[in-house]
Length: 331
Image 1 (cartoon, rainbow, N blue to C red):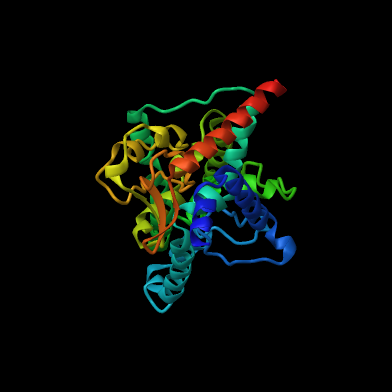
Image 2 (cartoon, rainbow, N blue to C red):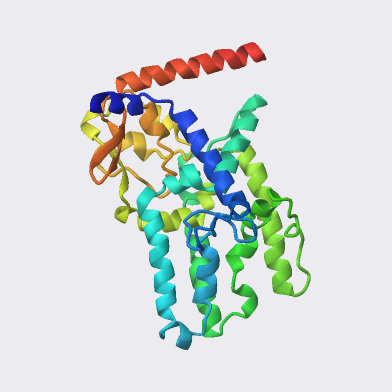
């Protein structure tokens, strides 16, 4: 029975499983309020609080407000509230690691749907060179700096209160998430002050770049996502791990070819056991695409829950070929 279950999982249709989970979490987070669902304000995905029907709020919104307190307040008993909020975020995160990105984040899911739409039109996607990839991967940490340091500077009196939620003001999710419940009130430039003009205009520009970029590049925004950077900092503490047995790797490159984030180490690094990288969204497509038994596997507490197998590879290749054949007939 146990072996049959393992075979069912390892040879299963990951694409279908992932689509179902992504659809569930998209509805859950975007429309959760309609069903009286509220998981709190420490969720490790871009479930934007500007959508008033959200099923749980992105941790960055309360974090910025908490860190913007005057320092004499922040480093007093009030720090317990900040610490409690962070621990709740960490508890949510350590369960699924960066699979929050690949399966639960509404903004990540939207990018995958845009990619599917592009494929339907028969338009090819663009890729980055490795130097470009290396450079762009650092930008997420600049945004994380804005999330954490700008509110602290406000509390110190260096910045004014309009910078309290600077990242939220420029984040595409602020405009996109409410749109799905019919709220377009964020689609405007705030002319109340020069700072408000600057931040809200950046939000409009970044949102336009989000849609264009996501159409021509898989998971475009994820390269710049500060939540992804935050995830990676604490990924070693997570229960879910992406591991590699380098001795079984033939460097065929199949894992790299399916990687939406173009992570070269997934194919080239045969020394590291923990193969998770900061750009990884833990979609597990690399595991599904690997033709070598146990070369790549997903573990929970050192127990393999999904692993690469020759049988799984062959079965998924057959499904992919059937889908391609069906699409070519439709055209």
